[in-house]
Image (tube, rainbow, N blue to C red; front, side, top):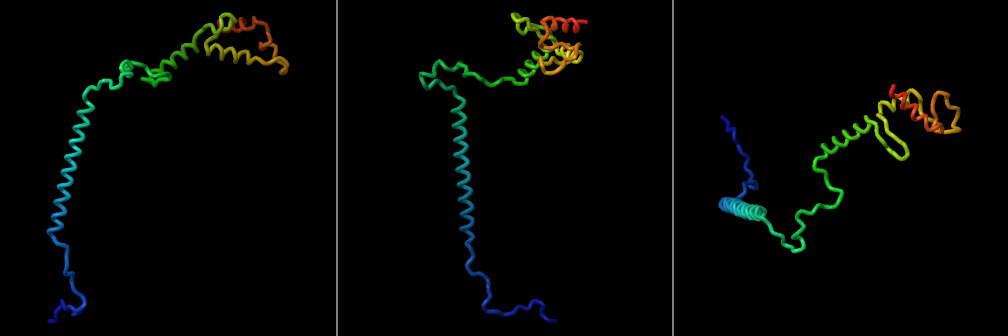
Length: 158
């Protein structure tokens, strides 16, 4: 039988004679492992040092700052609970929109509930300026007498 594994003889082709030494590769790996362990220990000690330093109570290092611990910062301050503040604001607005009250007592200006104001506006329309055009007879105008507001409030109470 013929030899299946015949190799052509070529004197110029051969394997590498100078490989990297195994001992040096292992020594480099061991040195890197030692460096990693030493640096990890240093980092661990730094963390312990900083944790101990931050946990101990500090005294005022500056004499001018001795009485300033409980002083409030200037306005505007951050909200502690913005959702609760917004909810309280909306409740106050809704309470104001649904009640009667004085806007300017000296001038005789009052506020009425928003539902009543919308009902009056739908029933009588919006007031117009004088000279802006003919106004329907049944709608009050802003140039009317001061009793027109009282008449509107009587309509609301009905």
